[in-house]
Amino acid sequence: MDCFSWSNGLLEINETLVIQQRGVRLYDGDDKAKLDVGVALLSTHRLIWRDVKNHECCIAMPLSQIIFFEEQAAGIGKSAKIVIHLHATPANKEPGPYQHSKYSFIKLSFKEHGQIEFHRRLTEEMTQKRWENTPASQPIPTGTGSQAGRTRAVGIVGIERKIEEKRKETDKNISEAFEDLSKLMVKAKEMVELSRSIANKIKDKQGDISEDETIRFKSYLLSMGIADPVTRETHGSGTHYHLQLAKQLGDMLQAPLEERGGMMALTEVYCLVNRARGMELLSPEDLVNACKMFESLQLPLRLRVFDSGVMVVQLQSHSEEEMIASALDSVSDKGSLTAEEFAKLLGLSVLLSKERLLLAEKVGHLCRDDSVEGLRFYPNLF
Amino acid sequence: MSFEWPWQYSFPPFFTLQPNVDTRQKQLAAWCSLALSYCRHHKLYTLDIMEAQESPVFNNKKIERKLSMEAIQVVFEELRKKGNLEWLDKNKSRCLVMWRRPEEWGKLIHQWVSKIGMVNSVFTLYELSNGDDTEGEEFHGLEDWMLLRSLQALQTDGKAEIITMDDGKGVKFF
Image (cartoon, rainbow over all chains, first blue to last red; front, side, top):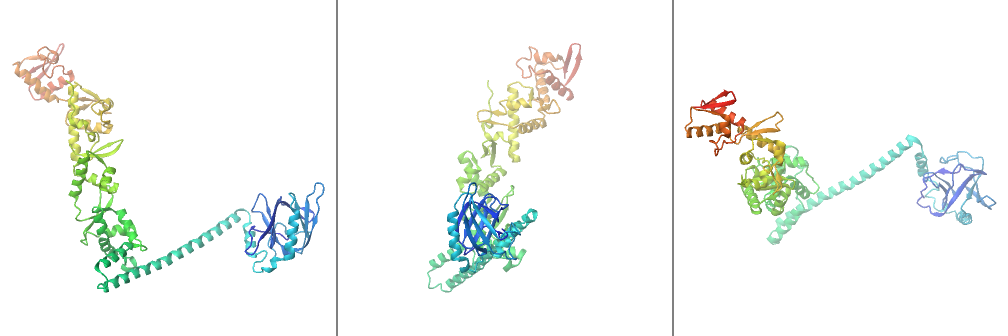
């Protein structure tokens, strides 16, 4: 029995499963082994036994250990057995359930039959000696063997080791994942370079390509992203960086703002800008700081903070009076409106339309009805 | 004659305290005048704040809106500031409503006395509020405490003097 080592029960790369049989009890010589009934597995390289209930309890021995084996017929109250005679156990063997044994043979007792087929297959494997043909993978590779031995360590130490191993595994996975990401970023830089060079070429060859096509191509490039995003690397940190960033924002936000009626929530701006920037993502803080520069740079944009704390970017030309007047018009038209209804009417976000209604209320054009049905705005008839 | 509700009564925002200061002031003014004219119509002199919430004044069942307790308190406080209301207890749960302030009542009574040429003569309080002569006058049926307050107001102005008599109180007008 001392020929068995603890195993994780997994087959090696070159190893193939030949047969498996349930209901097998192991005997150390003539004595019953201190193991329960389990499954005996025969592979091209090893004889493996696994406890039927506790799958962690798994032992294996190389077939090369076997000298010869014989059948032992069943008797009254006795199951059929295969007796396996073994070489002396090598000294450097991995730990197993038995460190010493006075017997040089083991027995497999077949409680649920199958011994005939098992015997036949074992004979086949012993004559073919397939484990010798694939020496690359040793019958019991020391790596897994020792690992199996270590995981078997009981108590807190065992658990700690398992956790440590898991952590190492995760670490490896994470660093691999980030390696991919940094490669992608390098590629993204190349993409930006490429688009810029194309843009330059177009500029040079303006005569060859029609004006219309140039514009269309440029708009494709723009929709792909900003050709040369302002980053902390290129423009340093602090005020200068925010100044440059503000200028770039001014250029890129003009069109979307006009499309959306002159006002966008800062969150929306954030998404739009970062989508355009691709890899050089902007932090919310940098965006706010850049937006605060609009006024000092005399750009046609303004950052506006509503009383509720909602921040928006709006065109300077976007007049407040007009906004209030339009809100009053819509509300008078419908009799009363909730922010949701107003948003639907204007195609704006609910948040922004509510801000407009609140603004109109603040100047006294509207008044509110706060009931169980929600907040409604009415023309101020008071 | 049934009570005539103002237009605001069927305007839902009327029942929400407006956050805009200017709007709120107009709203409160409308509430005060509604509350007073309602009390006047129904000759109410005291109000219980808990009952007020259920009364039709602050609860418009037709449009399913009612003024919240806090808002009612704000309206009452506004009335108090204007001198039309006085709390009867510290918890501010009951109050006197004076849809006419004592000075105004006093003025009315004095006008009537001058009209019938009875200046410098003495009246009993009962005569004034329940006598046959005052029937048809607005202050007919005025509650005693209110009448006394009005006369006290006149007295401070030097237009009347309250005299204690054997069977109650009397008043002499100047």
